[in-house]
Image 1 (cartoon, each protein chain N blue to C red):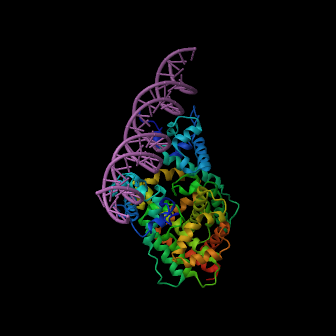
Image 2: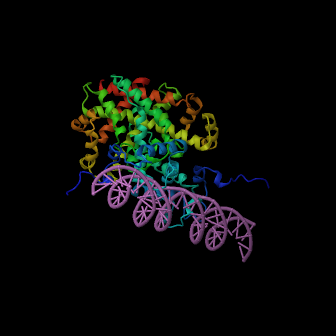
Image 3: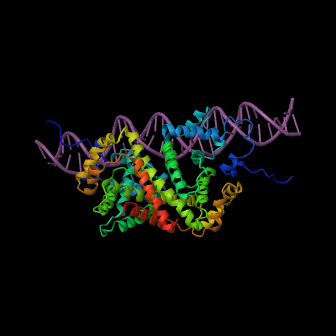
Length: 241
Length: 241
DNA sequence: TCTCGATCGATACGACGTACACATCGGAGG
DNA sequence: CCTCCGATGTGTACGTCGTATCGATCGAGA
């Protein structure tokens, strides 16, 4: 008998395996269970706590068990990333591209702040839930007279801003958590020695004035939304949409 | 005699130690030498190749030697990050804020593409060379009638876009390097099975059209600069500068 | 010359990712 | 009902990592 149409599971991508019809009989483990457990660990204790051994413990299983479903730790991270992207729940209730971009941006920010480890994850691996994002955006941009390249540029521009902004926000949060600072004021007192040393060099006069005069240093949402409005304004103006 | 003004070196920050006048006598190791070696390894073989042991080998020294200058691997990464930020060489030759932001953006992109591992580094640790960036930007924004918060918002907005954009660019490059793809076409053939499976689900019709129609998919510089112009336009328009 | 603190080396420990061979389960074919 | 086989989970082991600890060694001030 010649070759079966059945393929070697190891040669299939993670996503093909994930959607295979028969979930297999024994199934104490599934990709979903693995993803949920890994995400739970990462949410609670950070990405460094996500260990193949720790994951196995959490699943009540031997350290090597998960390797039947995931080819290595990198694929585990892919699985986690795709799983969380499912939380974005993109809806089709708006035809206005700008409003759609705005809610996508704020929702992305919310999801990432909820799963701060996401920011350390590789971008642009092709996973089903990640692909749904550009699909949604491109579809709202359709019919405005933009060519394909420009439509994608709009998507990339807004996405890039969101990612960068959330990244710095998370970076700050992470430092505060590590050092046990609960408020912006606590952080500033904690940072005071280092900061006053830097300021004492006299190399940062303008920054020093910013420190004295600014009043919204601890309002990341204001900062995020002002930047987002700038970006959306610029896209609309330059591309005439 | 009561307490000396000399402090316990372990309690000083990395940067205070770095600029202490006497570099110590024996000095086969210095923070600079350490930073250079670590950066060289990361540039050549990626951040994962930067190992305390590997670094020591490269410096011709015992594995634990560098710990005299760096409190742990995290501080080594800080040191590397600050070192590379020194390459930005911010100049004061422009008073026009927009031109200054533009050259900062393109230069940042260039430096990061030269040191792709930078993108995986924690943002916003207070290091001298990193602080020089907002200082430069704020000083060009000075005197345009913006309050301190808004000036900083401009800086953050542009910086966020740049970081996000470069991050996705580097992410793609990294995947291509890992899989040994040299051109965009090679990458597309390599990705073809996965992509055609995803497209076969019928869930991404607009994205599919983009794939057919787009002609600048492999022109990251065009994408970067278009987005940057949008962001700068938006900042200028919304803030009236 | 002696001493003392700053450097650097040697050794060791626990945790990590994962290769590999083995045990075990559950359903299909007789 | 039995048997067998592939899919699933286990046990063990190896090499590498970050780094704690302590001892050796060097240079300069007394």
